[in-house]
Image (cartoon, rainbow, N blue to C red; front, side, top):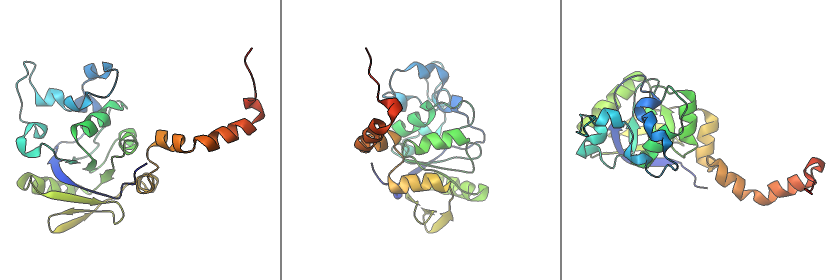
Length: 201
């Protein structure tokens, strides 16, 4: 289990309020059996016409390819609580998200993938988006210990629920890995429970 304390990556702005999970990942792609191709689909209908022609979207622009910190506005990830939305962003290359606010389930799903979903003020987000647009090649530094986002010569205060922050800092955000790491303890406790001591004929 990896501890996540600091993320350094280029930024990509996605401007607009109430960007829901249907826009992040169109419903027709939920039929994928695994998440392996999810990185091809984020914002698909906003990035391409029905004929496959590229639209003017930041995820299509050459200067943002390889970016790892998404900068969004308010109520990001609202709508249906599909895990595919953060999966598609992570598999595209997003390692952290900074926004004014989130849908609660979306933010929780991000952290369960090891992707911090942190909050900054409306004015700060606008300033960060403007700076990233002007400096797409520059690195941002998201520091979960200091709870700041370094953008150029400026540092912006960020927040997130302390339980999620601690899970990232301590490396306990991956519940599956956490269970596997404690397999022996789990089996020992299960064996000590009388209602677990049964056999099938």
